[in-house]
Length: 513
Image (cartoon, rainbow, N blue to C red):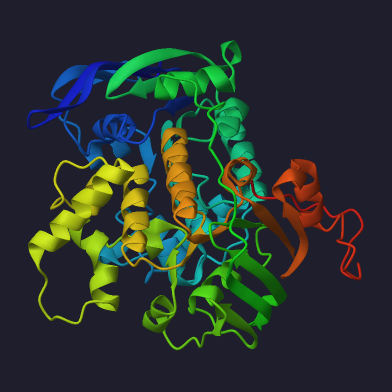
């Protein structure tokens, strides 16, 4: 065994985050660490990484007992942690980020930039990643930033690499590339702990598993001995895969009408109607224009032509404040970079949009703010110790619920959700689905941009499939079929009203799902 964590417990004051948890990882093994948000996975790994000290228990690594761990000490013995939260400095170049804190220097402490650049190029080349190492990180998209984090771990020849949700911002092609890299590392007897909520990934790349629930060890074993249904039951304590989400009858009243809008050479001739109580899913491939369409409907990106109507009234996009007044709010994708304000409390993160957009008073009334939060907290089952804690103290699923609650405080007729369940566990996903369907029952119109087929089937009434910046196909709920969605998204099928001129033979793109 490369790693033995025996009977680890961790207390934060009177609160037990971990109770008597053990984890064993063999040399050259990819070990899946499973658990819902708040199950204790990150706490356990932060103890191993030297960020926290355990309250009790023992850790052995490479046959040596580890005591008084620090981040620097764990890195020096060959343990690298790729955090879910990106730890890159946007204003530094790629190679500077790779060597940050471990720079190569020459005489008199002068940086050896040439050697750092060469080694950075070498490690990225070994990963088949084409990134200019002299490029500033701020110019890269999130998926590229995630790959740089992985490259940083490989650069210093770690014996054990901890990967916390590494595929959240990656495309299918990039995920396959990552798995190839992981298998090659395994052949070199490098071990990995892989933390993920995505069952297909875990079963594809991992050898063994350990499941945590409520800070306690539930079960360990080999993935070959269980299936996805059993793994889900271990995670949440019950089977929720067959749990039904009740759908209401959609109103015939048109709430929003989008007519032939186009923008910034990313999307073209987009038209659809959204009725009261209707949930529309918009899906397709990575780079199909969905990101820009979502932001254009919210007023972040410019609409070059076409019109948008709310309740039969044409709206004019001036700024975000005017968009909200027109009746549209939005939950942005990638909460880490676009939604949460890390240096603010849970309460302030919850309240800020409402106070900026609707409140004329210069003073914030604490009691009203707290009362509103407590109502949402109870309705949405948000798990918090204190509303004054930093939002980063919450699990990913609870952070996402706070962001959704912030959006709901605006009380708009139309709600845009851009990948609303990104980076949350399977139990939290179902809670988010229930929130979405409840909003529809209340007469809200929901536009959900998503790459996950299961949630389209769970909650959507209609699905718009994009291909190369246009809506290739519109499907009603009774027409949903995963294969058809994939074929329309790749252009293998073209809707009857399309010319087919963009269809490409042998298209090898795959839907992000």
